[in-house]
Image (tube, rainbow, N blue to C red; front, top):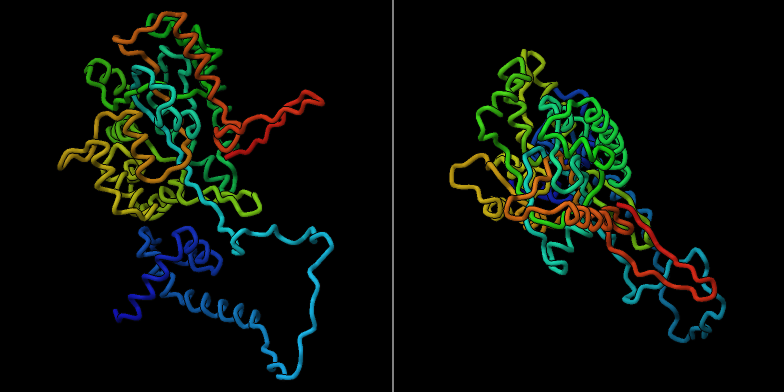
Length: 429
């Protein structure tokens, strides 16, 4: 390739995201004609250029510039004097934009929203100090849905549903590309709460399920992470492992279950706040399209390729794919692997905790997070809670479970003495 070609590729790769390139390919009726769909950004850029779409973009840009050229006026005569003008005395036009202190247009504010599903064993420890940065982040910036919901309660589920849940969540997000995640999470949590309650109602009473059955009315709800929590992704007990194995008819289905354990990325989108305060959302990544492409390109196979580890953050492949191919932050792969404590040559970690996840969110620049947590809320034996302490913690968590403004950044209420009422401004994300 010549230097000009290299510069063109670099320019397009820098200016356009994969979804933007894909949209132009679809609009130009090119996408449907492709024999092999591109996977990496380099492949998307190559298809974009080889079909001449970059020329169309340059032509449109020149046409816009031509229309906006202001005709020059001849210079004024040296003897001519400019008539004095008076400053405007009337009120500003309602259509005129508000004045900017610097005189420049304010850039839109962009915030990353990451949505995850966790399938794991869960055990909780001590609470964080109330004013610590990690406590404030999980209170204000993380919306969490928990099947167990109540501290000390286990999650009961059919192991065969893990992979189905992952596909269901990504489909719901994929169907609403321009919606707030509050709306999407409300749809999923409503469905899952109904399903889980019905599942518990039919479940036989036995020792380990007692707490879950007694709290069935409170299970499947929003919560807040106020304590350290450790997620483990392996069944060390051979008896437990064998009991799960019987749900699967083939080795392929069993391996799919094992690979679905983890921290699966369901959606990544931008919240864009314009200078006038209006908010829009743009999807950056959803695994739905990626999975569909793989299935489509492998129709001749008897069993589809399972690529779910590509979006699972407990796999090295998942970390590399999300940071390099989706967010284009390849330089963060090393620090992220270090945070998650991947050993050299290790492709999968067996456990993860909320502190490590917090450090990962901060490293990558994630402003808001949705977490669908299907793990238990067992309490570590060192920190066993009495029934009274459990109820107190549950009530405390519920105070922060609903994020009233901008995903939890509460605006102080303004009292109006005349009417003794409060005004709240609510935003969604």
